[in-house]
Image 1 (spheres, rainbow, N blue to C red):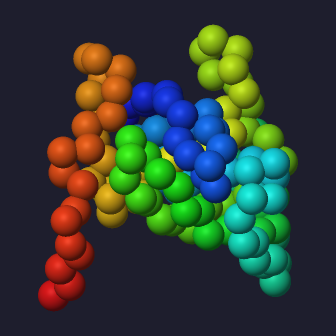
Image 2: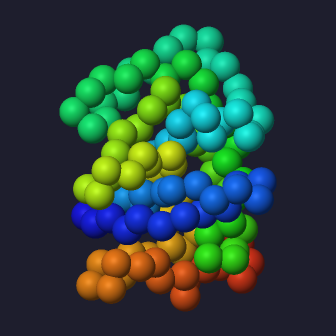
Length: 125
């Protein structure tokens, strides 16, 4: 498991993001979700994240740009995520499933993303 922090772009706005291989799913704050199409759940989903249990009541379609490349995912909406080690407010968590789908690898030694595995096309079998 590892983490890399950097800005992504959503609708032309920079958003502080934690790329976290220890998180399965992708999450956005309510503030970020206002920039995106959201969808209400019929029933709240409990999620344990950051030592707290959250009741998720909606998700959204996250369309963003990561290092100049488009990335799309379904993200669960949280009121807030919390702060990183430097005290900066985290607005998005990109989880392992999204990173796997889009070929995003973590270069932990250099604390940056490795986008060299980004798919040129999706091949379905």
